[in-house]
Image (cartoon, rainbow, N blue to C red; front, side, top):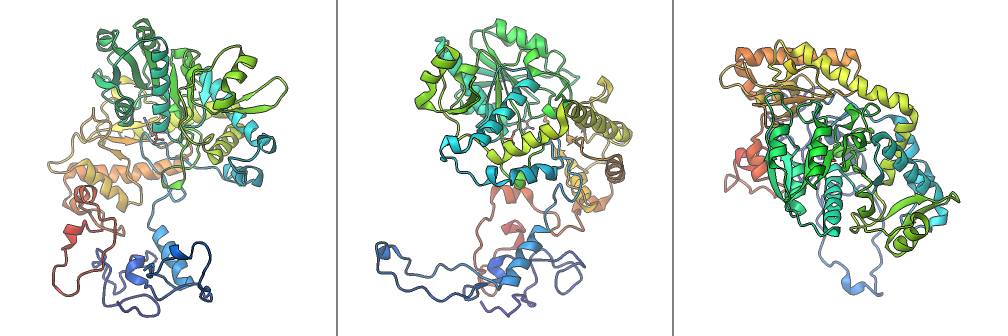
Length: 538
Ligand SMILES: *Cc1c(COP(=O)(O)O)cnc(C)c1O
């Protein structure tokens, strides 16, 4: 393949970008960009270094003999390539991100500053304990905040995401049941649960059974009670649930589950709606993960690793995974690993640990711990309470501002919590939630969560979060109202939206089923080149 100096090949317009009306594929400041394999070549490099001497030493026999074949560009072209690609992403720093159940909110820059302090950022997990006392103290301090805010007994800090935390909690439950010689095989999960709940239970070896929802979108308490029995290990409940509603029967659910010898797992992904207002420990919860990347504003999605500490009841705490931190009366913070566990527990707590094992190699996501504690300390207890209040206020503002144009199936049952749920009822024939979401992209917004929860037809779950101003909400509402009205009128142009995005309507099923994840050099001429639809429109 021959490439001109600038890397731009005017005779080969970029696939999928041919209808821009410009020869470059660019649309004003929205710049088109091909893959690096298409614009780079193996002969070009941005660095100029002398070839290395032939090594004759130890590993010489392992040296690569054929070229590595990676495409290169000059330095400025490389910078432009990745900058242009990055501009094709939507990000929380560009606009409102209404993804329900995900809590995509502003990441305060103070957190970033704290996480970059060299004393936290530049340490190694294997550094001698006495040299990293400050970092251990930070983990321990965050652990105490999480225990305090949830009214629980202990916390496992190491899980690295919400789903990982769910697994940790269910493994604690399994260990507690095994310790009392109680073989239970079933985990009950409500219909509206996030997909990770049944997946976690199944992964831990349990049979998953559904609990139905009431017409008000809440767990059917009577149906749950009727199913409880000696085979039920645990019930997994999300509270507030994924319909954006608080489960008012939570305490009654916990009491019934405990009376039947089971444990209560609470999916705490929506904790930002109740932080500072409700303590899950008071509701009888035995284990709950907290997504630091949701409630406590640490970056998530493509923005960085998550962190999912799991708070535990007194009954489950002894089974928590190692390592964990503990501060003894002398003020020293210990990182307890397998070797010290029993001796330490005996000396300081007068008991034995029955840890089920480990979740990760080390103690968890230090950078996320630092950001989350920074967020907690900068808000204080009163500020955290306001987080929940503002998250709920913003969601209700969305709900009430749109319920006349979008069907809101549970709006009659009172205010929502932190997210507003709508359905596609009332859309013109042939117009779907997907069409609405695509048209929202043209308006410059990331779509909301679609087709989840499953209990609502064509669901649209909107979570504005507490960090959006009224002006930002009003702009979003204006855009969504306009798109919703077009959906009701049956505007034909919706079917091919988005019209202004870098790519048009993609065949998402094909892209999901047959993703093209590796670039192949195109077959020259008309030979056997795949049609664009066969390659999923990239
Ligand atoms: C986000 C979420 C999860 C999973 O958390 P991850 O950190 O993405 O693994 C589980 N349950 C609910 C309700 C969620 O919103």
